[in-house]
Length: 422
Image (cartoon, rainbow, N blue to C red):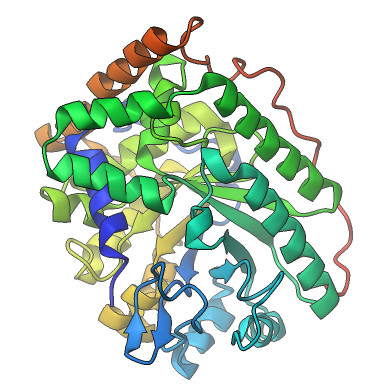
């Protein structure tokens, strides 16, 4: 099975079709002094479900079905244990924790307990029912805050240990379908009208403040909060405004996350157009470091799909990122990677982080190609369109970043000794 088709196409279209400014140079980038810390590869896991018809990608009709765990074979568990590989486990509000409908089956408690017993770090990747957006976005900040509180109560009651909680900041499920339909249909007028209808700078600020409060609430309890974000979010920040995010109903550039991972999915782009090469990934890593400092990282994907249908490109991209100074490299997904490469492939990808690229090899890998430059040059026009639309429908124009929505500073993470259940 593979990542849900709509999301895969959406990430590819975002990179292949949106107009962009030239990326910061990465060819000569050198790791900062703090890169003496080890680099770690992890895996997003557990998004597929098992229905009466077998394994299926996640969708609106199967949200409450049990998660597929076929990738977690004894051999894979052994790699995860030996290498202390972090798992970013898909956790569903209303299925795995919170108010759960009668008859709903979940093995989340047992799964996390097993990972805890084996010393495998676990990050709770929170999602909500599809009617509420599934992924975190501008319109469901309050729902995500409620889900995070419910997850915290559940983990404490069950005495489960998590390294952090992760929010997936991108489109809502419904907005993704609308966006893809308009893009694939070539409906430029429809896309412009849809974007214009989404614009609400005041609502964007309210959502940013809610996410700020969520992070502060978690920090007060010693809970680190991370975020994955769609590529358009980084593209949006180049002009110092957040018009494009607002027009797409995204709020991924909150400055308070403990780690922020941009989904630099080469495979998604390759399916929508052609392979942009490693420089595409490197350029987004440079952006993330520029905008978010040490907390800015990237996530790789999609394991098992071209060009990652062979092991060498994935291994080399991990080596390239560690050579540039990346500290955390989550890969989407454990299931697709195990499907293609098995436990031995997982181990090779994880071990690649211990062999960073250097010198001429690193310079060659990060050197932009015409196609990677065209891709990274693709968002400026869309961003400019979003800015113009905002100026037309709102007197003060788009919010500036990072200060346009006021003080988004979060309270510091409380460093508490690990307790049972935390």
